[in-house]
Length: 362
Image 1 (cartoon, rainbow, N blue to C red):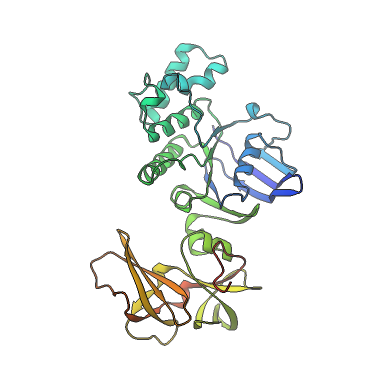
Image 2: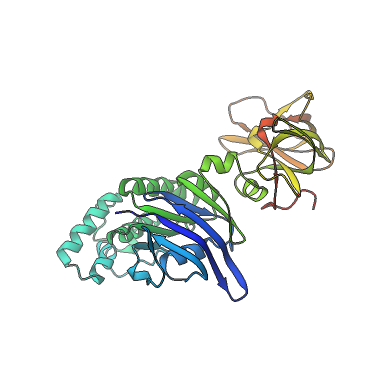
């Protein structure tokens, strides 16, 4: 079984503080949907409202088309996985997984059979009699997922479940979670502040800031076509230039900044304080200046980061810039080299709105 989740102008107020502000989104049955944003943006509050532990101040929440108003958490077709997993250390693994079934009055033999099925699903078929203390961090994550799946939820809610794991294990568990979700076809709603998790696992992502939903789109669209300055700066790295549009033609604008006159694409929000956003992987370093979109720089550092190399530089105004290049054995500049950073107009996006990072002209 699986179900979609509809949030219709949902708000959450705590006294005079509005944690969630008129959020509307339709999450499809069987979708892996992530709410992505910084701490305090309201994403966990949304999860608590879907699960029934927090009541919305305004708006409606529907699961499978049914309004959840006045429906208690244990009556909702959801299962929630917390950050700390909340596993029972004195129970063997299979009893941890079957605990929800025991509460529902399911017999021991049937509970054991269901636990064994789920252990195979999460690739822990030989761990039934182990204690929680005998498991690795990744194995504990899989036990928590199996326990949640045991009660056959229509919707799985995950509140930053990978945050306590080291980088390599997080990357491994991303793939595990995605594979489990695709096998079960249960709707997953995932909360994270880690853009890598959201982009790698999700069918769609909702980016949040200050309680508001800024953009809902596929990971590729979020990264390549952000709708405002916050989304552009929060998801991925950017070189950012403040300035003004002085001319537009065919969707390409002339943009005047302290670092020079550039050309870039006009984004969907182009009123108010404007900035030009340029991804490091879209910047090229060369000895000669280009006719347009060329910035003279002095290389300040060359950072080896494994599969790519980050080249840091300063322009004549003192603004820091970074270009990324693949680690393909090519010739690299040295610290102190004077070069030109150049880019194509199609790869530069001019957007309005606040940024997640410190303003370049602050």
